[in-house]
Length: 192
Image (cartoon, rainbow, N blue to C red):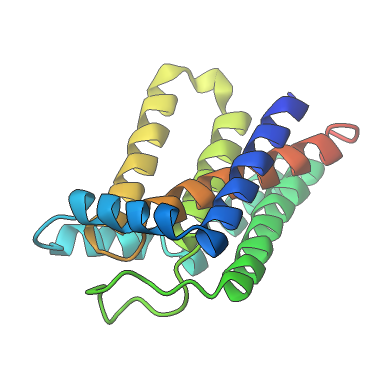
């Protein structure tokens, strides 16, 4: 497996800077609110809700288990453990960070959205899954990369369009996902 300590460090630094600024900088938060307002759509159509549902963090756990089951069926037990551990570690870290940050969601968010805003659980989960699938199936070529990138962009757009997250929530979730993925990849690289 490919390991990149630099990527881990950069994603951790971005995450730490976001946490610091969200907690301490009024100017940063005003800019984040302004940017959120500029990015949101006037309507939050049903299509965005379907995308959000299909990529709900709880449902992504199911997709992750299916992927691990496929790997176990292919006698790739350590890879299956890596897949489960990576998403599990990212989700647990994201939940703890949400509870610690206590960041409220943007005004006018859907009543279907509960809990805190930072980091986005949807973006965290889909980013980890895209990285895992990309790592496991790199031999499938650029077509898979295009599909994964489009899926990721759809989820990100849905979270903004549904008014569920600020841009920094998306960036924070992406940074956390890359950090968790890279760290788990480095830990498992000796065994896989």
